[in-house]
Length: 248
Length: 248
DNA sequence: AAACAATGGTTCAAATAATGGACCGATTGG
DNA sequence: CCAATCGGTCCATTATTTGAACCATTGTTT
Image (tube, rainbow over all chains, first blue to last red; front, side, top):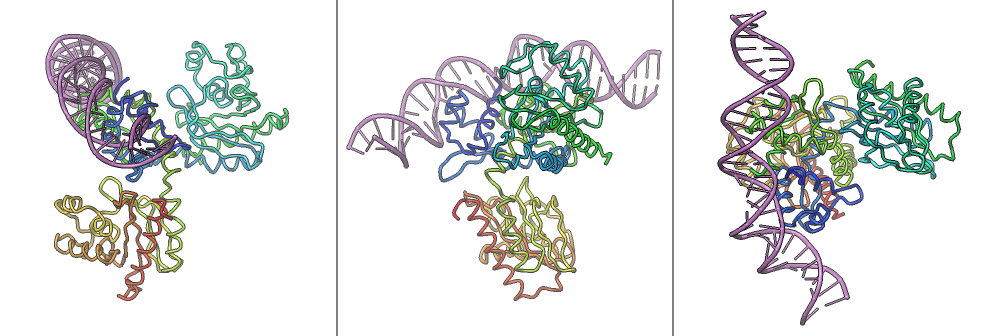
């Protein structure tokens, strides 16, 4: 791996649950030598992508990241524009709703609005979703150009649960449903007991850039509820698309 | 410079005003070979810190930065922690109060609490403040290490109004005042008719990371009021510092 | 249309920067 | 009090990065 890749993989070790990590720990988990890890951390710290807590000497993500993210978000205000719509959709459906952006062949979860119910689906920001096997992914594929879909379906597809759609035929069917109805549906394709409804968000060029999805415990879902969630998800996705492309 | 440093300096070429840059341009500005720049960009793109617009083939900051910034902000909630204190200070003084973070040689306004009065100072989130010429900046310099201050004062300083302090001597005096009293004072240094009182917020290492400032119409200010605003600003800044560093 | 000057992207021998085992002093915990 | 772990440093060896020369393509100028 490139040196830069190693440095970035150090950054990626930090999570919401573990925002500060010591040197030895970082080196061990990244599979690097302690000396190497330290040199990389120092290089990152020089640009404020990493900070070091002076008391404990542990490392954490730096302010430079916030700065760079602000620049990106100002130009590409996906989350900022979508967040209120996502929240509204969560209140309307009473379920957890999450927003994802397409990036490097997968969907990256950017924002989550959790259901207020005790029995709810939990999704983490930062989670990477495959294009097959999640409602978000199917909705994304359904909005993509055919050549993109074809290229994706050629590769072997991993099954995450016993219900994951891996056959090209069943997937094509699900994609066709999403293409006609405007929303996709996935029952326990990624995690047992979770039902999801997805809809694609489009960029200014009409190509999909991300998705939103309503995730419910399967026990609360029947066809009528799924249908109304689908309509609501589609409306929300179209609203975000319109605002993003300035057609508001 | 380390390879990692070069890669990060590529990221730092993107700004609010120029969020997409082509390969040759990036290489030229970073002082790197085209081939080198591209390899670094590819390494960054593999981790989603950079994206490439497929049509124009230009590069932009990637979604991974937003992800990492979210993790950092969740753990190091500068604005979230400071906002209630800012609000309280605004209510106490009856004036507009704003919060800034040091970033790339200047202060970036992150949060504003406007005065309830009709005649008030308006400040915008996102506004960039110079270190000289604003009360925030003087307070920041007064809390910085001497070498940082020296380096900054060496460069020629722009005058924003007829009252802007640009001479090293007058600035040194203002900094000295801020260093002893804990708060800085600037009268019409950045905008005519505006009087400001600033105080620095410190990180865990004792170095300043940002500032807050009380901004009033100059017609409402006399020395006694300025003094009480200064004491209040200092208390508020210390409270935020304490909460940030966990010494609450 | 032809010539031109950019652009993004690729290759490979040479040069440079990254690597990691050994080591140090300081904490920590049994 | 000792053993284990921590963060941090050193430097000969090694592997990665480097950049001039090279395409193919695009868009501009003559």
